[in-house]
Image 1 (cartoon, rainbow over the protein chains, first blue to last red):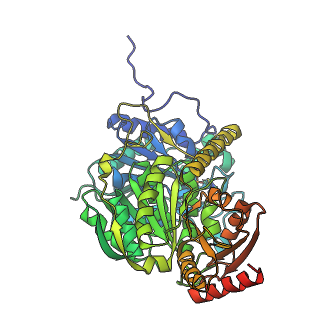
Image 2: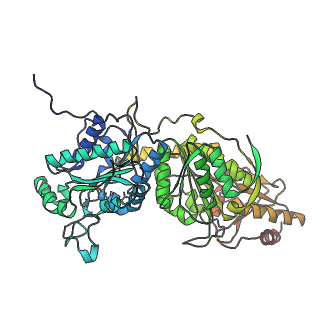
Image 3: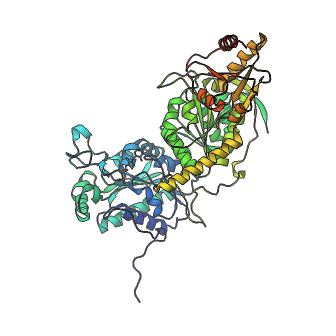
Length: 249
Length: 356
Ligand SMILES: Cc1ncc(C[n+]2csc(CCOP(=O)(O)OP(=O)(O)O)c2C)c(N)n1
């Protein structure tokens, strides 16, 4: 008899994806669903999706979910977690959401050491609104509002929010991963699991930044998008553990 | 147990909130309401299940309140005019997602930074929903220390009953004023009726979603009609106004909050000179107490709207009177507080000019 080696986690709803071909959000949703199932926390997890392409995350991940206004997910997650400290609360945010309009909420949630987990999807553009420059857009990268490429003098350089968050006293675990190869996908799953476990152990603020392909707005094939993450994006945003104090008491 | 105490307005609201079962407060400092968060920081720390957060901004504060409300808590934030502007996005989300929350606005002189003197300049902003979109929020206007307590209790009850944001609209004068107040009895929030819509982890039930993105235009329309029906019900059930000395009145002075107190002093003075003048004081600014206007005796044909603004409630008064009688206005924008003598002169002049 054939052995079952791969199945849909039950926390992932059986629906047709609305994401563009090659988009990383679907992979990340799946990884979150798998981790929730592995840790058996589906009945005590509350997610906060953002305004952004992932706003419909609740159509896929089968846990309680509350949509936040653009940039405000960590503040909403803070309110939920403070009232229900024994639940697992995560915010799922894009790079525009988290590193531009929501910078203040994110930095202060980290600094207060809110015991929540942020899934920070860095696709280098504003996906939902059609591919404008994000704070994470790389110098020279084309977007609909940087038609000549992002320019240091005009636009400033790419913002490394994760590094900034690592400086705050309340953050305990920050890692940057990617979902452009099987190996990186596995690493990302591990990082998400570690962040959730850190929250379950009441350690404080955890965040996983995930470099994620957006072939539609990058105007590349999915395969080229994956290569571009390795060659370009990861040289500006290196894949690494940025901060890990989870072992300290 | 209820007890009578001497307290300033901001402390009354804070204590009444705690007694109403409020267990979550988030806010950002701004004068003239700082005593309210200061009181809450202490009160919440004394409670086993209380949370106080000094947020990084009003924007963050209102979104924390949204989170606490989603998780089922009675939650409150407070601010003054410029900070309320920053919270407006959150009010719209509260309304759209049908979440209860209590917001206190201790109004100050505006626009811009303005000053910290009392004002009633945020009437339009408050009564027209308070943020973007087609909705309303309940707005309560206390005019005494006692009402600061009683309306705070009502604010939490209404918020939960109708799943709607409720604003307590007062000003720096109401906030600072010390008056003896009979505080309401404490409610144990665990004994409040359960909220079957909150998010607390999908244990033994299907998962829930709280959202406001309604991509299908017909679904969005249906949702807005649902809100309208709720607004109509609220209008029927809670609209409220006080009338005073209206039985023989030839002029009705219309004022709310601090302005109503000043008007009362002015009416007392003109009554001493034999003028027949009464007061109509809206307590709910939204829903506006139209019924009370329609129920006024036909003999009242002159209405003097008095506000500490350049004329905002004036529009609702005109709409409620629907062309009946003559509507006059006296107002001064935020800053100097008009005196009862000053308003008494305005009333007398009007009385004689109209040959009443
Ligand atoms: C206050 C506000 N401003 C702007 C928008 C429009 N908007 C929605 S999503 C978004 C940016 C999305 O980009 P990102 O956060 O990077 O997520 P992605 O869609 O790329 O996953 C913007 C600007 C909004 N919804 N609310």
